[in-house]
Every structure is written in structure tokens, then in C-alpha cells.
Length: 217
Image 1 (cartoon, rainbow, N blue to C red):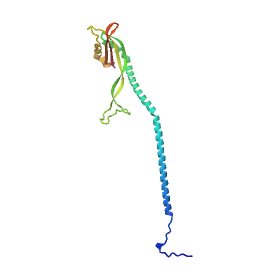
Image 2: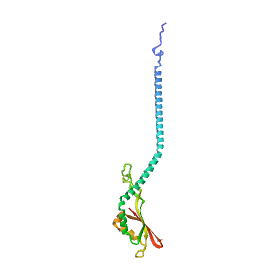
Image 3: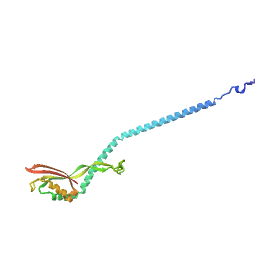
Image 4: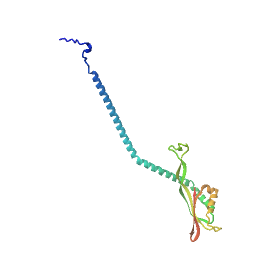
């Protein structure tokens, strides 16, 4: 049986296809899949970064003991360096001590005798230019001048001790020894008197003056 649609063209029912809806759904699903994949990838990358951070942080904490030991060894090295410099200075002059002691004896007044002459060391505070890790002078960022720091160093010291009895003037004078050693060009060039201690006392029933002079070498 043949059916003829006599309705006008604009009133005829339109047959719609599902293809656009299917394509829209497929595009939406594809977008959701891509966003989900991107989210999971970022989450996995963040988790990996967190694991690496925890691992590095754990390694850093494990290095605390090594860093502490390194700092202690550095401090010990500086102390040993000061002692080495003192020893080297002493050894450099070891063959001349007999000459220096003889020269000291020629400067010693007759009213003085020695009980102890020894070589020791003292710690002094000195100002030095601060060096950076490359061994270059560290500059002040404002003034562009080298930074000066105070450091503790060991210096060799000649310690001279003894007694002074009354001289021809009746004085137990130790100042003549200090003046003689300070005014002598040769001795004062090598030894600089920086401390002098005197105490009036008795020795075997005699009135004497005990003294200790320290000379910076």
C-alpha cells in the first residue's frame, strides 16, 4: 500500500539522527579521560617528588654527625697549625740559642742571677684580613674594603726568672736588666720585653727581689 504525505514540507516530521549526540558523548568521555590521566600523572609526579625530598632530607640528617666532625677537625687543624708555626719558629733558631744566651749573659748586671730560662708560648689576639673559600680577601659589601677579623695565635716567648741582690748603690734593681735588653740593638731586634713581674722576698735568709721577664720572640 502506497502512502502519500500530503502535508506541506515545513510541517512534515523530521527524522533526527543520534550521531551528533554520540559524538558529543565521545568527546566528553575523551576529555574526562584526558583530565583524569593528567591528574593521575601529576599526582604520581608529586608523590615521586615527595619521596625524593624525604630521601634527601633523611640523607641530610644523616650528614649532621659528619658535618659536626668536619667542623671539629677544622678547629683542631687551626690549633695544630698555630702550634706548628710556633715549633717551626723555634726550630729555625735552634742552632743560635747558645749565642743568644751568651749575649744575654753579657747584658746581665752583676747583682742578678738566673734560676730559670725557658722557651714557652703564649696566646695572643691578632687582627688579620679574613679570607674567603677561594683564598681571596673577603670584602665588605658596603665599603668594598677587606674585612678584618680577630684571631687567636700562639707565639713563642722567652721566659727569664731569677733574683736580684743589692748592687753597689744598695738597691735590688732589676730595671737595669730590662733597660739593657731593651736598648741593645741586636737583642731587642729578636726579643721584645712585654711583661715584667717583681716581688721582694728572702732567699736563704737574704733579702732579694724575685723577677720574671717575658720576651716575645
